[in-house]
Length: 214
Length: 189
Image 1 (cartoon, rainbow over the protein chains, first blue to last red):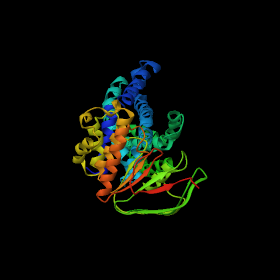
Image 2: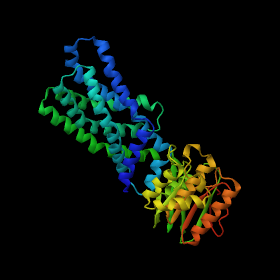
Image 3: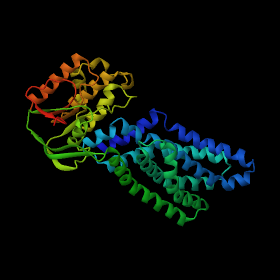
Image 4: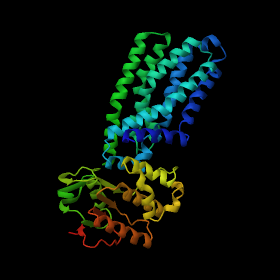
């Protein structure tokens, strides 16, 4: 197996076997459950704000696994062993992004279907939310890995990760929520933002990993 | 196969060693000695390409393998599976069983890494070095956590590796017998 594929597979395996994936999905569903309690059982209002709630919940859920993406591998010497084998740091980060997305996005999309029922979201809105999340989650995964690499080894990394990551996730939220009324321009901009994050994050994360060594 | 050319190491604004030069040909070994904090680990990490020297160059050929303080084995995996991940990256997944036998851990192959003791983890990391098939072994404190019998075993493994034309760079503060090795004393001056 190539180095890239091996790292992707390892990320997926670790995410599933250590239960790191259930937590964000459970958190996501919990937010979706709490919202109807908070705003009251007005199904018209819920249907109106439901899509935005799902996007905000997805953003917060994406923040949860950040602490386990890079820091444990840095501490246990796994990243050093990759580097000694000639794998470049951006390549490692890119593989981690792919593995993180594969493990994180499909369960999140499934949970979105459940959440949309809780929020009384109409069927066509659900399709738009799912399409938007499918386009936006690669960007979220990229942002997660880059943030994880930047805060790895710092004290209070979890709280710091939120401060680093959420501002950069705002464009995803804006255009993701903007795409809820089926505006094709919003979808295109969402795709563009997601692509920028996916393209840039491996180099940011790679540089952060390299700095972390010295 | 591994050569330092006037290498200087600076960590945190402090010069750890300056103008260090040596060369290791096939079958040769270097023993890096010195008190704590003198830059032994940094030197091994420079040799592994993980740290950039402040000055000078490191040259070498052949694959390198590193034994560092951290075991870098996934704790939830069985020992053989954890080693097979790394051996697979080296393209030698079939070398794991032999490597485990060589370090005397064949019967522990199916035990999860998290249940292994410190010394057993260290021996597992040595098994990864053996399984890698790399020509240049970079060992940072390989004797830490090992019992006396395991140290003797490690000395035998290094000797066998050198007999096959391999190179070993060993940084240690514990006595490890490396017959005919260059001794590099850091911080002695």
